[in-house]
Image (cartoon, rainbow, N blue to C red; front, side, top):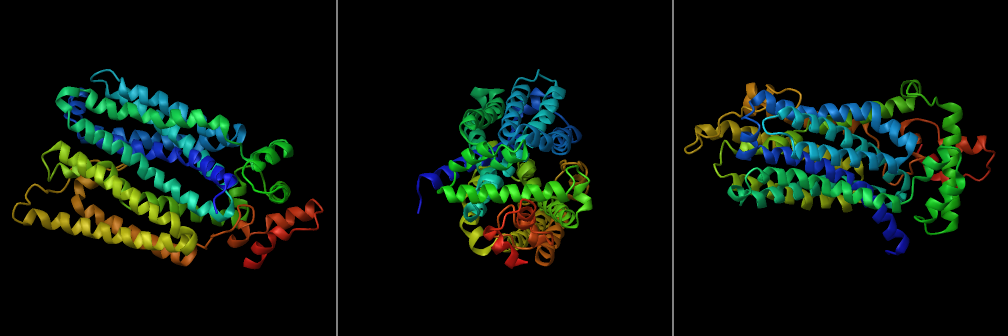
Amino acid sequence: MMNKTRAYNWYISLVAASCMVLYGYDASVYNSVQGSKHWVAYFNHPDTELIGAVNTAYNVGAIISGFFLGGPLADFLGRRWGMGIGCFITVIATFMQTFAPKGNLGVFIAGRVLIGIGQGTALTAGPVYIGELAPVHIRGKIMAFWQLFYSVGSFIAYWINYACSLHRAKLGDWDWKTVVIFQMMVPILIMTLLPFIPESPRWYIQHGGQVDKARASLRRVRETEQDVEDEVLVIREALEFEKEAISSSYTALWKDRSVRKRLLLAFVLNVGQQLTGQGTLNTYSTSIYKKVFTSSSTIALINALNATFGIIFTLNAVWTVDRFGRKALLIVGAIGMSICMLIVTEVGLQTPTLKGGSKSHPVGIAIQFFPTFLKNCGFKTFYFFFAINICLAAFVWFLIPETKKVSLEEIDVIFGGSNHVEKGGDLLHVEDTHHATDATEMK
């Protein structure tokens, strides 16, 4: 039953999850502006390689942030500051893209790099914040909203673009500038709300043992004082063990067997997710549809409807993730994507041979870091995505354990590591470690 505390848990988690709206909006913005003749003319009709460079610029910024900025910033200043700084950089980058001098694609590309840095920073801190504050029994649902908000970002961008596409003649260059500048709406909202949500209790205890501040944060999101004290104890025990047994440097990622296993599994899952083909279709769907449809408004409407269905079907994961588990959804999703990629390939290859289908020639567009891949291979490219999804489903089936309803501090056991809570309790000379019982039984 929903009460004030549970509602507040949802509220703060959704504020953090809103960082994903930035990513969904941005991925759709670039796809949208490619359909604007005014954008193409404004930057002197960029060729395929330059279009690929514009998209790649975002990835360069995201990699810089992911490796060198996002994690250290969230660890040093706190999760809220990580999200806030990322949002601020996103606002600056949005201005750069909107008001880039005419014909100067370099400024637009620089804005793309900067927006990658900003979003990479916010997207690093956001899920960490949710994982450290969300109660175990709703963490899966809330993390499903993380993906849902990607679809929300796409939904907003595409429907704004569709509205602008109906008035391109009147708007002129502002048919694409309006879509771009609206990107600052969500980061400004997030920055406004961040001062009023609690910092992560784990971060407080990790930085100077600020137990009182950790308790104050937890009292805002837990229902009883016993829940607060239990969680403070769990966090202290886990951190004590990590301090004594695990190096605080990045070398710990390789020295500790269980951490190394998790790193590799997470790496493969995230790389696999990026190679499912969904991102490519989302980024370049406008260019693909141009081979079939002549009306820019029709293309904008199809993109908007696609984003709408994305929200509907992602909502399905919100109630299924804690019922059927993370593993089942990953497998079903990968198999479903493989079927979709196969359909895209077959339809794309067969359409040019059908009556009235001569406009669907293999698509000459750039694809992420490999701008000539799709150009050279055409729709056969999607056979690659089909194979990746099949491999991803098998990988999850054989190697990924289920983490449903397991607390953040007790999840180590599932991956073959020590129970940080119990070991930390021994170091702190705590006799009652009843909160670790469930994780111990899983082992």
